[in-house]
Structures are given as structure tokens and as C-alpha cells.
Amino acid sequence: MRERRASQGVRRTREFETFVAGAAGRLLHTATLLTAESGDANPRARRLLTMALGHTYASWDRLHGEDPYDSTRRQLIARFQRTVWHQYGSLGRRRTSPDHVLAGLTPQERLILVVRLYEGVAEEQAAALLGLPAERVRAICARAMATLLHPPRDPAPARVEVAPS
Image (cartoon, rainbow, N blue to C red; front, side, top):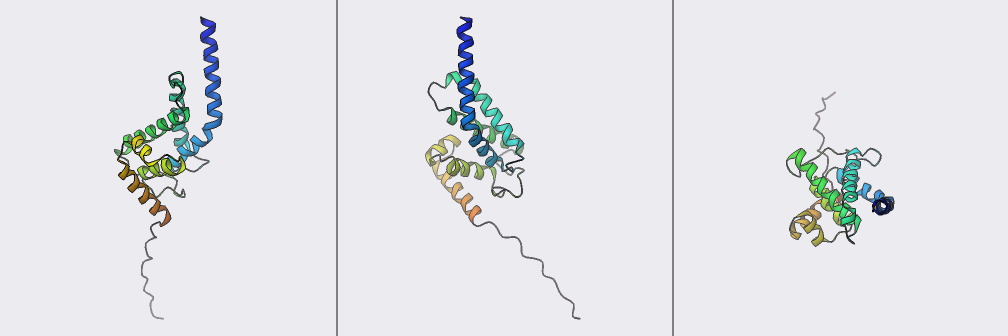
């Protein structure tokens, strides 16, 4: 009995390591887009991914044919939402890298844009995943795209009076 459990544990670990080897890069990029950190300095994204992968590993035997990538992505999204909620009380603004292309978006806009466009999740599935109506997801995604495509202009420079010479 002990040998059987040990061999199951080894098999489970090997399967999980194979999954991580194939999916961790894309999931880390997803987490980095969510946090709007730079690709080489992304401690919050790495922490989110580590926690999501830990949950996936803990529930590996209970997945029963479910796609582990989808499960990990759901965990990643849920942890991102929880982190933003606990630190800011809602999906308000977060610290981001100022030079990141997604830095001008709110966390909710980033979340929906990343899920819809980078992860390729259908609108209805994204709405169910985020607990929002599909129309709301569509509107937020459109607003985020408009913000990215037409960023707000810098304020006009102050008018300077030149003294006559």
C-alpha cells in the first residue's frame, strides 16, 4: 500500500512538472500583464503565479480530466481580483510600471482585456469567469481598447508670456 501511494505521488509530481514546464511561461506572462509590471521585474506577478500553481498542485488529483491550464488561469484571476480588492477596496488603481503599455488601465480593464485578447476567452466565458454580465464585459473591453488605441493627451503646456525686449 505504501509503495502504491509513493508511486502515485511520484507520477503526480512528474505530471505536474510536465504541465508547469509547458504552461508556466505563458501563465507568467498573463500574470505580468495583469499586474502591469515590467517583464524583468515582476515580483507581484510571480507571487500570483506561485500561489495559483500551488493550488493547482494541491488539487491535481481532483481535476478528473479538467484542463489544468484553465484551472490555474481561474486561480490566477481570482487571486488577482482578491489582491486588488483587499489592497484597494475595489478594482481601483494599483501600482504599475509607468512605462508599461497597460499602466493607464484600471485593474478591471486590464483583467478583462488580458482574459479576452491575450488568453482568447470568449466573451460569455469571461463574463461567467469574472461574475459579470456579458454586456458589461463587452463595454469594459471596448473602453480599455479605446484607451490603449487613443491614449489621453498630455495637458497643454502652460502659457508663457514673453516679456518684450
